[in-house]
Image (cartoon, rainbow, N blue to C red):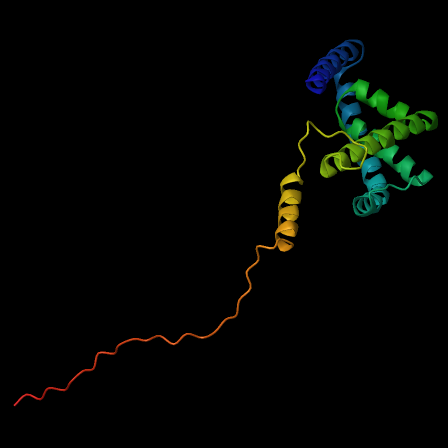
Length: 185
């Protein structure tokens, strides 16, 4: 709900800034700026994803993202590219701020922190709080039924109620109906 509200307020602010700037300078200049910013944003996004994608694939496999300086810089460039693609002057100003090195470090640190929290929450949810130090999520363990079944199978294998036997072939004792050939004269 908060995210939706922030997006709506952001869109309203962007439109208000568009109208305000178009009053002072020509609306065509604002329009051409949006096109130029989108082209620059696409180029930034394209150049940064070539470096980021192998790292993200590695993160999927190992669960850890390497904190190389080039990778963190490319992540910040990708975020700036996305913000430049969005038509609006406020998002463009934020994108230009993200291109500054001190702001890049803050953005990447916040992003890495958010990714670590999300990964921890996902692992806690997957393990259901079993020894992971995570929350138990309301006492619901997704593997609880499976563990009960496995424990039930282990106890039944050790019970003394097991009946052993030997298989033998049984020959059926069927009466066969014999057909008599009756010749017609």
